[in-house]
Image (cartoon, rainbow, N blue to C red; front, side, top):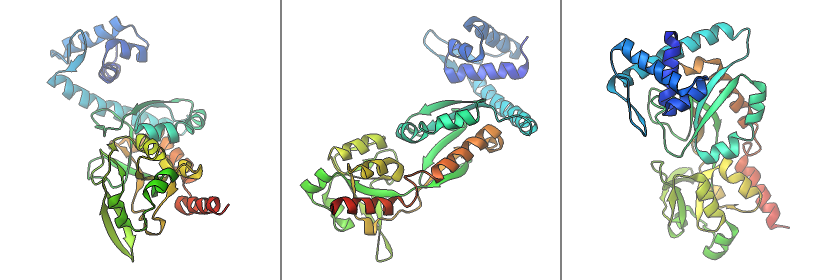
Length: 317
């Protein structure tokens, strides 16, 4: 007979994977064995936890309560075991990480092999989507955000400070002219993020004062990668963090504009964690690794100044 923590763990995996078969694959049992375990659990509790249909599984009200309590219990067990064993064994366990697709593909994927080699007992499940996820409700260990944070019960750890750069393709600037003052942007096509509040208000610093400019354009999207490709193709001007635009600028595909008045502002990259997760060794070493690697990334050090010098050198050749 399975122990109570094992039942809770398998029940949690069933909900996360959305099927008995998916959970069975994760825990090394057959789908029928997982289904029988859930049935025995429901009989013991005297309530139905999951409504089953031919297409999907849905939690009952009792199931929602049991899932929430189970997560708390399993996290407490994992934290206790990790704290006791961390002195003698390497960090281990499974991480569920949410990141925006372009950031994950361009910045996380290239450095992950080094992390996995350093910590071979840690596995990672990435949830890649442009929507803002419910970190606690979707059982996410680490979720990445950029910019100002809203008040919440989540734990926030800064990974690195980013710089936002206003830029456009050489073809766009040749066809539409180069903006000289921030106010010129109102006559340009500006490409903005659709899922970030205030994304169409770009801040600049003029004579020491912060000046907002309300921009507009033909396209907004919840994907920084899509806006980047549109800007490279000449569709308009973008304002994105240096991890997104620095490679394109260094290749001459985009050029910074309004460098003298750009306001980097407070635009850090954050890791958001459910309360208590920051104590888990698997989470701690993951965030320490990212802080280390991003702090020394080529796009990080003096991005705007470095890129500006490169652009000027190209112009004078």
